[in-house]
Image (tube, rainbow, N blue to C red; front, side):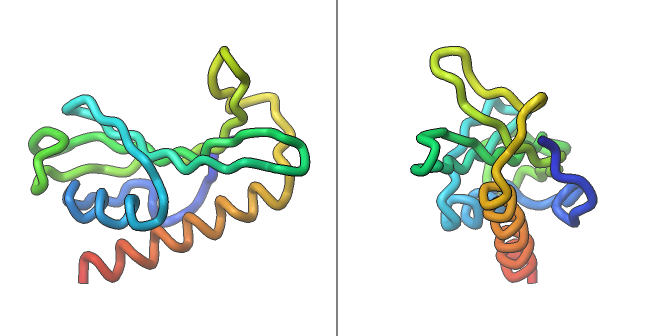
Amino acid sequence: MKFEAHELEGLEIEFQALENVMDGLGFTHVWDYERVTFDYKIVDQVRDDVYYFRVQGYAIEGEIPQPHSIVKIMKTFLGKHYYPHGVEYDNEEFPKHIVEKCKKKIAGVQKQLAEEVN
Protein backbone atom coordinates (compact mmCIF):
# COMPACT_ATOMS: atom_id res chain seq x y z
CA MET A 1 0.00 0.00 0.00
CA LYS A 2 1.40 3.37 -1.00
CA PHE A 3 0.70 6.46 1.06
CA GLU A 4 -0.12 9.33 -1.29
CA ALA A 5 -0.23 13.10 -0.89
CA HIS A 6 1.96 13.76 2.11
CA GLU A 7 4.76 16.25 2.56
CA LEU A 8 7.48 13.64 3.05
CA GLU A 9 7.59 12.62 -0.60
CA GLY A 10 10.13 14.71 -2.47
CA LEU A 11 11.66 16.21 0.67
CA GLU A 12 15.42 16.72 0.39
CA ILE A 13 17.41 16.52 3.62
CA GLU A 14 20.89 15.71 4.89
CA PHE A 15 21.36 12.03 5.64
CA GLN A 16 22.54 12.61 9.20
CA ALA A 17 19.40 14.58 10.11
CA LEU A 18 17.15 11.98 8.47
CA GLU A 19 18.97 9.14 10.20
CA ASN A 20 18.71 10.83 13.61
CA VAL A 21 14.97 11.40 13.26
CA MET A 22 14.15 7.96 11.90
CA ASP A 23 16.29 6.12 14.47
CA GLY A 24 14.67 8.19 17.24
CA LEU A 25 11.22 7.11 16.03
CA GLY A 26 12.07 3.42 16.10
CA PHE A 27 12.97 2.79 12.46
CA THR A 28 15.87 0.59 11.38
CA HIS A 29 17.69 1.17 8.12
CA VAL A 30 19.80 -0.39 5.40
CA TRP A 31 21.74 1.48 2.71
CA ASP A 32 23.84 0.88 -0.40
CA TYR A 33 25.64 4.20 -1.19
CA GLU A 34 22.83 5.44 -3.46
CA ARG A 35 19.70 4.35 -1.59
CA VAL A 36 18.44 4.04 1.95
CA THR A 37 15.42 2.20 3.32
CA PHE A 38 13.98 2.87 6.77
CA ASP A 39 11.68 0.16 8.13
CA TYR A 40 9.29 0.27 11.06
CA LYS A 41 8.09 -3.18 12.15
CA ILE A 42 4.50 -3.47 13.34
CA VAL A 43 3.28 -6.69 14.95
CA ASP A 44 -0.50 -7.21 14.98
CA GLN A 45 -0.83 -9.41 18.03
CA VAL A 46 -4.53 -10.01 17.43
CA ARG A 47 -3.97 -11.67 14.05
CA ASP A 48 -0.33 -12.62 14.63
CA ASP A 49 0.69 -10.77 11.45
CA VAL A 50 3.82 -8.71 10.83
CA TYR A 51 3.77 -5.50 8.79
CA TYR A 52 6.56 -3.20 7.67
CA PHE A 53 6.08 0.52 7.18
CA ARG A 54 8.83 1.54 4.77
CA VAL A 55 10.31 4.95 3.91
CA GLN A 56 12.77 4.98 1.03
CA GLY A 57 15.16 7.61 -0.23
CA TYR A 58 18.05 8.08 -2.62
CA ALA A 59 21.14 10.27 -2.65
CA ILE A 60 20.99 13.27 -4.94
CA GLU A 61 24.30 14.68 -3.63
CA GLY A 62 27.13 12.62 -2.17
CA GLU A 63 26.90 9.01 -1.07
CA ILE A 64 25.01 7.40 1.77
CA PRO A 65 26.07 7.13 4.67
CA GLN A 66 28.10 10.35 4.49
CA PRO A 67 26.48 12.65 7.08
CA HIS A 68 26.16 15.64 4.74
CA SER A 69 24.93 13.77 1.67
CA ILE A 70 21.51 14.96 0.51
CA VAL A 71 18.74 12.37 0.39
CA LYS A 72 15.44 12.75 -1.46
CA ILE A 73 12.56 10.88 0.16
CA MET A 74 10.33 8.77 -2.08
CA LYS A 75 6.81 7.38 -1.53
CA THR A 76 6.15 5.50 1.69
CA PHE A 77 4.80 1.95 1.71
CA LEU A 78 3.07 -0.49 4.00
CA GLY A 79 3.56 -4.19 3.40
CA LYS A 80 2.67 -7.47 5.03
CA HIS A 81 5.45 -9.94 5.75
CA TYR A 82 5.06 -13.53 4.61
CA TYR A 83 7.68 -15.93 5.92
CA PRO A 84 9.92 -16.96 4.12
CA HIS A 85 8.96 -15.07 0.96
CA GLY A 86 9.23 -11.45 2.07
CA VAL A 87 7.02 -8.39 2.09
CA GLU A 88 3.93 -8.03 -0.11
CA TYR A 89 2.70 -4.49 -0.81
CA ASP A 90 -0.19 -5.04 -3.22
CA ASN A 91 -3.32 -7.16 -3.12
CA GLU A 92 -3.65 -6.82 0.63
CA GLU A 93 -6.40 -5.59 2.90
CA PHE A 94 -4.60 -3.79 5.69
CA PRO A 95 -6.32 -3.46 9.08
CA LYS A 96 -7.51 0.07 9.80
CA HIS A 97 -5.54 0.32 13.05
CA ILE A 98 -2.30 -0.56 11.23
CA VAL A 99 -2.94 2.07 8.54
CA GLU A 100 -3.74 4.66 11.22
CA LYS A 101 -0.50 3.82 13.05
CA CYS A 102 1.43 4.45 9.81
CA LYS A 103 -0.32 7.79 9.30
CA LYS A 104 0.68 8.79 12.83
CA LYS A 105 4.28 7.76 12.06
CA ILE A 106 4.23 9.94 8.91
CA ALA A 107 3.00 12.89 10.98
CA GLY A 108 5.70 12.22 13.60
CA VAL A 109 8.42 12.04 10.96
CA GLN A 110 7.21 15.28 9.34
CA LYS A 111 7.17 17.07 12.70
CA GLN A 112 10.60 15.82 13.76
CA LEU A 113 12.19 16.63 10.38
CA ALA A 114 10.74 20.15 10.48
CA GLU A 115 12.30 20.62 13.93
CA GLU A 116 15.62 19.14 12.78
CA VAL A 117 15.85 21.43 9.75
CA ASN A 118 14.93 24.61 11.65
